[in-house]
Length: 408
Image (tube, rainbow, N blue to C red; front, side):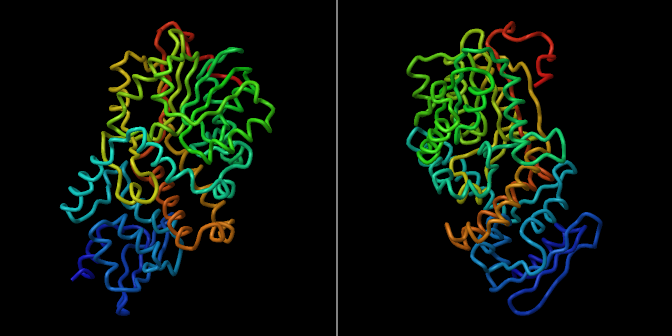
């Protein structure tokens, strides 16, 4: 029964491009029509449970079948497969691939809600799940200059990944409107790339905080090697504890961390930031966001990639910051920049396939590349973007025009 149901589901999901499916019993079906710019993919299912698993939850079911080697891609690759499905159901045109099973959607929403508590212990555990899997993997995937695991900035198409990440750091630094000697708090500092850039190019002091022990160790090494150890301090600390210490900062920057806070902690996060930001201070929040309203995190991402994480809508982000009278002085929507960034990471992973498998195994490689394919295409065709939100506590903290954002 699952096979005809899946055929009907796929016939609705794929109109342009071609998707061929060979079932475990040897029967086959083809969906869609060849079209310029749309991939042609052929899948083979190795057992009769794959159609049922996909019908129950298209993203998680297909992902786990692919990870386990039960869904084989015989023509094309996983990036092409996910691109085909997403391009046929683009968010801009009202598309949205959902599970045909309404009970499964209800269970997913309930499970998501239960995971959003994200207290201090849970936050550290969730961060470790993703970031403490080993720096060696990220060395093979990220740019080798800045170690930036967040959306790059692409003012030109012909830039390298390292150049685009450098452009992102400079773009954010301009929005912080820095002066020499200021003290900057970097919440979720990663491997120290932002802290090093600000200290080196703007002569400021930076305190970076992270919950990842792997990141902490390497960030400290990179700070030392960059010759800015006198200006940069990296600590293993939760932002709530930093706020409780009573410290205040001239500038606050947070890049790619807000996605891990969890919806239930949005008010807590902004209250802490408002408490830590100087009266004439400036804050820059760089986060993945949703084009539409609030939603939930899909089961695959919660299980395999970012447990406890949530991609915020702009509306709920601003609603929380408004409660503590943080003024959103500038909002920029980066629509396609992250898609270009993640495709560069995906290419690096393919180029380093053998090394990644040696570090982990083939199952991990399939899981990781499925994650990257889904992430890239959701920024190309789905409802995700990046927001850079600049905040001030005083309306007079910055020039009254945006001319200061132009320049080096």
